[in-house]
Image 1 (cartoon, helix red, strand yellow):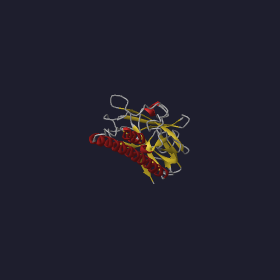
Image 2 (cartoon, helix red, strand yellow):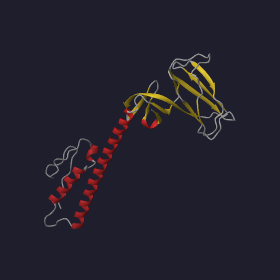
Image 3 (spheres, one colour):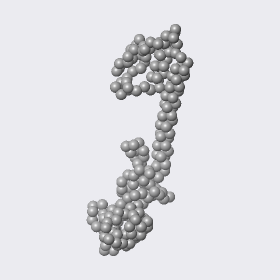
Image 4 (tube, one colour):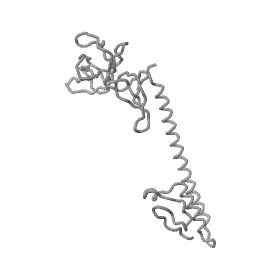
Amino acid sequence: MTTPGMINNTKANTTNGLEDIEYKTREEHATLNRDDFMKLFVTQLQYQDPMNPMESAEMASQVAQFNMVDLMYKNNTALQNMAKAETMATSVTAIGLLGHKVEYAGSKVFVTEDGVQPFHITNDQDAQVTKCKASIYTSKGALVRKLDVGPIDSGQDITLDWDGKDSSGNDIPPGAYKVVIEAEDASGNEVELKTRTLGMVSGIETGEDGLPKIKILGDKSISFKEITKVES
């Protein structure tokens, strides 16, 4: 069987029947797609010695290789289509969240005309928290109120008990306020607690990964998977 000519970096030698295979980069030259494999396979059949045809076992092996490449190509296409469909479904779901309140991991508590929105503090550590304080600040860093939260057992989840008033007993205006948690165990060691907040979805944007990002009014944008609860 005659061996086809060498393929250069730009275009196959026109004498070997592969003139349609072109490569733009060195990386492309090092790989073959499904069409390239078929052209090589057909060319190999064209250039074999008619007096010494390919053995049936070798022929079957070549056909099996082509079928494998074709199946991998189709599977890859199917996975890409599934990913696109999932992204589209997620985007449609995200749009449906506009105007709704969602719960997510955050450090801001929102005050609305209806009052203070729920702000959760969770002790997911093995140690019991014996002292816990919550300091509430404005967006400019001014201290509004410092609350004594008290002890929190391991695994316990509590809601911040705040009436929306400052340290002088005055009602504060609606807006987003930052909460800083300071917690200690019985030995005085710092304990890191998790916090969740309830915010309003104000918009949808596309992230760097192509997936939708949820814009929270007065706070950061979050991914769809960060949402732990949706309120009607």
